[in-house]
Structure formats: C-alpha cells, structure tokens
Image 1 (tube, one colour):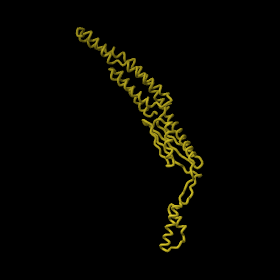
Image 2: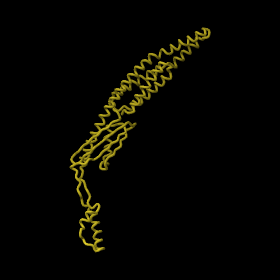
Image 3: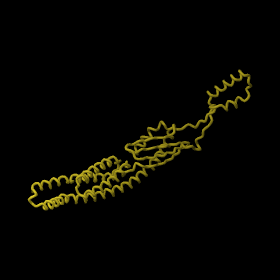
Image 4: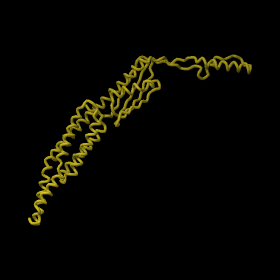
Amino acid sequence: MIKSMTGYGRGRAQIDDIAFSVEIRAVNHRYGDVSIKAPRLLMPYESDIKKRIGAVLKRGKIDLFISQEPTDAAVAVPVLNKPVANAYLQVFEEMRQTYNLSQGGALDLLVAQKDVLVMQESSVDESQLQTCLNRALDEALSALLLMREREGEATRVDMAERLELMADMLNLVEERAPQVPLEWQQKLQERLARYGEEAADPQRVAQEIALFADRCDICEELVRFRSHLDQFADLLDAAEPVGRQMDFLIQELNRETNTMGSKSNDAELTRQVVAIKAELEKIREQVQNIE
C-alpha cells in the first residue's frame, strides 16, 4: 500500500505522576528529516526517539513536538538550600556586629531571601518516563500513519485511473502510427503526379519514403513506454516505500513521450502525445508526495 508523506497525529499518555503530550506532523521531502522540540528532561532520549520515528516513517519532513503535562500526583515541595542559607546567616551576623543590630526577625528575613527555599519536584523513574513517552509517541505515529494511508489510497486510485487513461491513449497512438508513413507516401505520389511521371525518379521516391518512415518510427518508444507503464502499475500495490522508484519511472515516461512527439509528424499523433504528457504531469505532482 502506498502512503502519502503528508500527515498529522497526536498522542497522550500518563503513568502515575508522569504525563506527555506528543504532536507529529509530516510533509513531503526528498529524504527523511526529523526535528524534535521537547523539554530538556528528554534530551538524553532524542536519539532513541529519532530511531523510533525512522523505523516507521522512511521519507518526509517530520516535526515532533513533545510537552510534559502537569498532573495531580506531581507535587513540587519547598526545600532548604543550606549553602545559600548559611551564606546569608554569615552576612547577617557580620552586619549585626558591624552596625550593632539586634537579632530580632532573623528567620523572617532569611526566608525572604532569594534561593533560600527552592521548589523541588519529586524524582522521576526513568523506566516509567520512557514507557510513558513511547506510549504517547506510538499513539501519535499511529494517527499519522492512518492519515498517510488514507491519503495514499486516494492517490493510488487516482493514479490507477490515469494509468488506464494513458494506456488507452497509447493504444490509439499504436493504431495511428503505421498509417502515418502510408498517408505521407500517398500525398507525395499525388504531388508528384501533378508534375507528370517523367518528373519523378522512382528510386529517389522510394528512398524518401523509406527515410520518412524511419524518422517517424516510434515502435521502440511505444514498447519502452508500455513497459514503464506496467512497472509503475505494479508499484501501486507495493508494500515498501516506492516514491523514488515512481519518480524515476515518470522521468523515463516523459523521455519516451518527448521522443514520440518529436517523431510524430502527424496532427492526431501530436494531439495524443500532448494528452499523455498532461496526464504524466498530474501523476508527477502526486508522486512528489508519495513516501
């Protein structure tokens, strides 16, 4: 099943006093590019997060946003910062002796100083933290993959219809191509007839007809085009990412179409070739968003 590179997913998980919310969004990109915005608490886990994402998403510009949510169980408590408190007490005692001050209100004064009391959260269990994070991440990835698969399926159906349409156009080209040199031969003979038989060299006429037939022969291009078309159709049902292979085949199909157009020498053939190129361009735009 082909997948789009565009998608969005969100997940949330909580274990005891740990809770994470994860948002992930992806757009098309030539390679796999993952960027993470997360609390400093999760910096040691960024490498593992990228590996977890890379195992699921092979291509795309992927932005991951992780936030730690407050919980009722996560309570911060005041803790005495003894080194700072001791430093303040030493300064207070020095001031009292220097300026002959009383000791009244020393406790209230000490508590009011910055960093004497600091808020400290309860310790975090690393295994619980990683488990909680992975649950939220997996939920977000599942939602994103579902969106990618749905969009990929819609794209697959559309491309399959366009491939059938191009195959029908190619059949018309194959039917028309052999008639072109025959019609040109007839027109040439009619023009020469107007000048009389003595004005025409039969051998020279035969050479001109052979040269024209060779110049407008597109049999090889038709064979290669149909082969590329069949390969492209097979990729629609592939299980692995096929965006790059599709992009290569579109380039080859365009190359064969351009060659057929340059050799056509016929208004009807040119019209069909232009129509094929229009369908190829529509498919090419869709392929840019296929993983």
